[in-house]
Length: 424
Image (cartoon, rainbow, N blue to C red):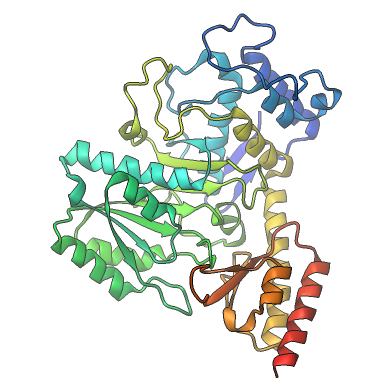
C-alpha cells in the first residue's frame, strides 16, 4: 500500500516500483468480477470487443493500464462515501477512493478522510458538478429559487462556467480582470456582487482559478474574501485547478488555495493536462457532507446510488492517474514540474532581451504573448493558441509541456528573433 505522510510544511507519498504497481493492479483486478471466467449476467457491459482487443496479448502482462482498459471496469457512483457500492468492480474502485484521498490530503492539504470525489470524464464535468451541488444545496437547505442564486467568476475563467449556468438555469456575473496582471478587478467584483444583490440574488457560488486556461493566472483568495465577507453573503467557493492542480502546488510553497482554507469547498483537476494521462481524466474533490446534494435517488438499480453527471465511467482512467502519481512519488513529481518552470524561464529570458511583452505566472508553465508579436507563420508552425478565433486576437499562448524539447524552444526563439528583425 502506498504511504501518505503530510505535515504542515510538506507533501509526501512514496514512489513505487513498476513491479509493485503491477502487483497492486493485478490484485485489484482479481477482486473485480471477471467477464470471461465469472457468471456475470446482470451487467449491460462486457470486456472490450475481442475482434480488436485481445485479453491474452503477451504485452498486457507488462501494461497494467491496458490490462485494466481491456477488462473494462465500470466505476459508476462515488466510492469515497463509505457506502456499499457495486461489488462487481470493488477492487479497482478501492484504488480510485485511495487516489482521491491522496490528492486531497497530500496536494490540497485536507484532513484525512474529510473529502469525497471521483474521476470525472474531464474538468468541464467536474466544474459543472460543483455548481450543480451548490445550487441544490441552496435549494434544499434554504428553499432557494433558481433566480435567487448567482454564479460569479472572472472573465478569464473556463467556458464550463457559463455552460454550467446555462444547464442549471443560473444567472452569471462575470468579473473584469486587469489586462496586464490578469488579477481580478476588486472594484468590479464588488460591483457585480452588489448588482446581483440588487437583482434579488441571495445565494452565491464563486469560482476561483488555479491557472486559467489562456493565461495561467491564479486568483487571489485574500483579495476577494474581504469583499465577500463585507456583504455578509451565503456562499460557496469552488476552485478550478484543471490546469494548475498538478503543477502550482508543487512550484509554489505559499499556495493559498487548499482545503486548509475553510472557505473553499471543492476543487477540479485534470489528469490529462500536466499529469499526461489519457483524455477523459478530470478529477472532482469536495468536502464531506456535500455529495448528497447531487444524489440521483431514482438510480435504485445502482448499488450506492449515483452522484455524478456522467453515470457510468471507465475505471481504467482512475487506475492510470494513480499509476502516474505512484511511479514518480511526490519528490519525483515536484522535480519534474520544477524542470518545466526552468525551461519556461529560459524562454522568458530570451523574450526579455527581445523586448517582447507577455504575461506569465512564475509558478505556471504557460506564457501568453501579445498578438502584435505573433505572425501567422509562427502561429501555424508552433500551434500557438489565440485568445479568440472569432475576432482579432489580443494574445497568443504557448505551454512548456514535457514534449517541448530544448531544441524546439531554441528554434522558436530563432524564428521569433528573425521575424522581429524583419519587422524592424
